[in-house]
Image (cartoon, rainbow, N blue to C red; front, side):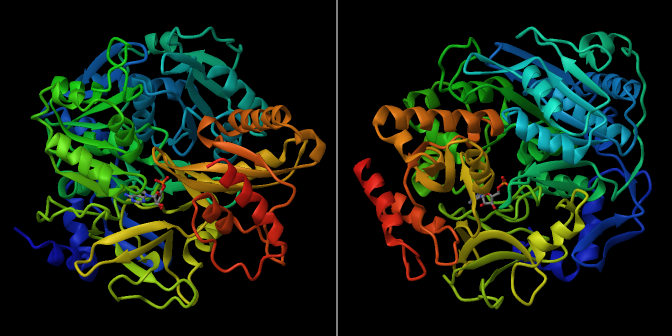
Length: 638
Ligand code: AMP
């Protein structure tokens, strides 16, 4: 077996040869002329001149060897339905969908915004876009109108694909009215909207703009739509992620590099083999959904599960915290990928559910998206009796930066650490203010990656190269290096430990939220003068958002009833604008916020107080009574 250390070194020292070899994991219509062009840093171009197609690699390529093998398994514990598609059936559905997109005017390079629940048609649409070279932009179904509108304006889609509704915990969540409102709010208007009618809620169909999936599909039952051969650097999709400004960034990804990166990660990291079944409990609205629900497993010739529902509801819609394990038994799942928060939810239930089903097919549990605390990792590892592998990455990278590559050489996991640097990533810890590299064991620095980023990582920020450079590559003094905006340390064996973000981004149940975005929304309430939002440690969700607001009219929060009323209004506003995931756990009212003398909000001090930690050096603070108010409020409610 190759030593991982050698494999890793080769990926950096003999970069082109290493990635040329990995390119052989996918099909190319024309082989690449050049492996990596890094003549214009930090923009890396992979597999120049090569032509390929993500949909071909995910679907068509498997028609020869495994046409009747299951490709897609859709399970909903919300509508109590299960449906499977073989590669042949998936191929037919994707071609029908591609023909529908074409009929609605979508051509190569056009954007298609997907705002959908976890249903098969969402995967068909993503694959159909990839097939014809349209750029998809999936917006998480839980986002509310204003968030969708800002993404519509940025992506300027020709078509939006959506549905009547999703469902959560048995409650119908209507998408159509949210979408109509988003289109009303956006400056850009799509030419057409394609809607799946799940029969969950009545839709107000707008003539000349809205089309129904069912009727249009009927017209294209026999569609034959060949794959467009795209140049490796043609854009496959954009996905929005939060940063420190209120304006979400469109992370832009290529075609060839992404396909190779996913194929390689399935082999070396996830150990996925054709014919096996992969279950990622994420959502297509997140990067994990793109990489490890749709493209990665299918490229590897595996069956993939799309799951709509809570981790605690059964196939009959009744409570069943054993549903995942039941699915493992039923579909012989080999790899399960989830987030620590979901495991913490399960931990609150009777462990008997873990023993009820035959889970002997399961080889490994992968967890990612937020720090995996040791007790949670230990609990699930003991309960399942399979390896639990943490993996650390970002929407920007598309696949893991730090984990264990058991497909290269078996290595132990260390709970509390997501692992070691993955091949292709030249990971460094840097001193935040000097840029100096920190090589010492236990020295804390910013986790940074030396360019070029490996295949599969973001190419740029959609339509904003300057923002890409400024946001990611110019934050460490004196160096052009990619910042992850995470703090980390490394132990003597090269295992990293992630210590939290260096910026004002928080992570709620594995979802990244910019506190600025929430603050901007809260400030738009007519009775809020100023607000600070911080992330506070939470035993279940990792972090929750906590808001401290200064009302314009102090008298309006003079008693408990009035405070609760305003708190309710603020929460509702956030829910309506940004969606329920961004809603703060509490909104507390103060007369003043702690700031430096130059007027900068002291969010870190507020966070420390909320977490009962020492707020550190407060010498730059303007008026100490502001932090005292917060301390008193928090202590009184602890
Ligand atoms: P997102 O792009 O939304 O997936 O968020 C990426 C961020 O989530 C990272 O920059 C980290 O702050 C955090 N994160 C993701 N995976 C892990 C992990 N395994 N351990 C610790 N933090 C993680």
